[in-house]
Amino acid sequence: MPKETRVIKRKRKHIRVRKKVFGTTERPRLNIYKSLNHIYAQVIDDTKGETLASASTLCPEIREEVGGKKNIDAARLIGQKVAEKARSKGIEKVVFDRGGYPYHGRVAAFADAARENGLDF
Image (tube, rainbow, N blue to C red; front, side, top):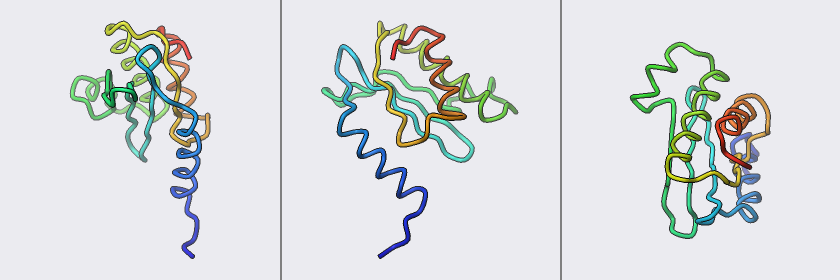
């Protein structure tokens, strides 16, 4: 039996959360993924299976703003940008899918910034 790594535990938690968290047209799912150096966010309508808005630290227009910022500052910026993109498409209410990560650090900073910029979850 393989040793349970941190990644395997996170994926198992994410599967458990995804059983309950489902994005609809009225209230899409705000998903977050973080790697060691970058953070990615998407607003997803699971009924249609399409991404409505997205932002990451790799997007060309955001990459310049992130520059040499630390990870938490970059997460705040991505939360702000994805909230602005979602609001421009008329989305104000979402369900938050933290991707199996603890609600702490970059994830909490991202969520707080998204809330401050008009998303309700």
